[in-house]
Amino acid sequence: MNDNVRLTVWVRGRVQGVGFRWFTRANALRIGGLAGFASNLADGRVQVVAEGSRAGCEQLLDWLREGDTPGRVDGVTEIWDTPRGVYESFEIR
Image (cartoon, rainbow, N blue to C red; front, side, top):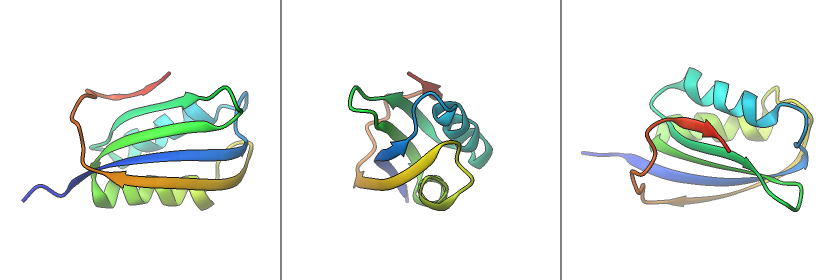
């Protein structure tokens, strides 16, 4: 059984120019088995897309919500979906 999922997250707050994407990638790599990206959006949010096990994605989401992130997180919106399998690694965009 494949329990892989796709998690898309939009993070609001002071999350650009503070190393947020770098730390997000480092955390995804530490959790392991996740592929996707972290990207700055024009409106000041950071978008994070992760594909992998539900447990791994939940761990990343918990860190984005309440972890020791750089900057300041004011809010997190997430959507769960079926993985598309288009990512080979976890990248910063």
